[in-house]
Length: 352
Image 1 (cartoon, rainbow, N blue to C red):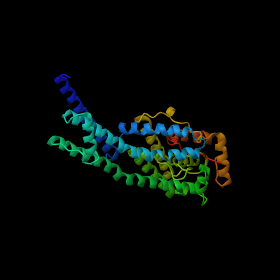
Image 2 (image 1 turned 60 degrees about the vertical axis):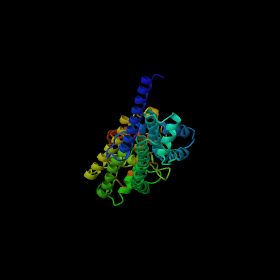
Image 3 (image 1 turned 45 degrees about the horizontal axis):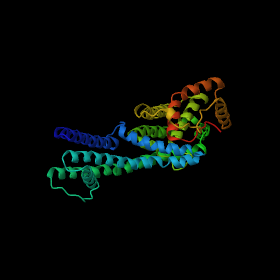
Image 4 (image 1 turned 135 degrees about the vertical axis):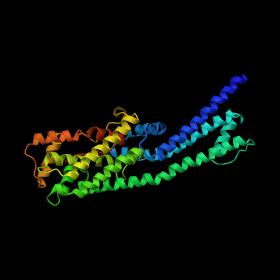
């Protein structure tokens, strides 16, 4: 090869390796250190590649319980795979830089890069600038692992806080949970409009969901310990309960309930837009969620009958109440349907 052509090739390869290392380090920092909901394309490619494998396995499952067991492994596997991909890319970038600096053959550069990244120290070099590169690679290898390990407690703390509310909702709304049962539980003292403390707790939960599930998007795919539970279903349950209260129950609309409903709509829609607009995931690419159909008029009438049986006073204009319920539900229905498909959440009913 012509000397000038070889020199040009070494320069391009070295610069390419440097860009790859910087890009990978930037992806790691933006994933776990940057305190805002920024999409990291490198992570999206990793997660979607692994998700495609799990989708194939889920399609072969003949029940929701089996799909749930399969998908329960997706988020942990994807999270563990992330630093593996980061370190592989860093190693590849340093291979290019070692070769550009004339350290030897590609095999020799690969051996030196692997030894430095994994801090094995099985190879030696007598060039000071090469040794400086090996030390920097060893430092980056430890840094990438440390970033993930240090943020695992943060992820699982947010998961634990989320699941406490999910479990409490199941206790109050039954199994499977329905909005009519939850509204009946709120009417335990005969005044469904006066439980501001409970609605305030749900408002706080929605705010935490919005923050944690956009800044740490992998958290959205961590499934509940029990197959019949889901944070998406719980969000829909609370919002459906508020929509039923506003459209069906004759009486004042508490300000705290209105705030909780608004917070829930904002949280669901912002998480939805995060995945839909920024990651490029489209509803058509997701598996259909046959377990979570939208409520129809028959479900609505059944919910009204249950509420009447529990002693609540309802509006006489049932057709007008149904129209208002549909209008309220339209504010979050698209986001709820998308996130239910994305996370393969169990079905949600307003009555039954």
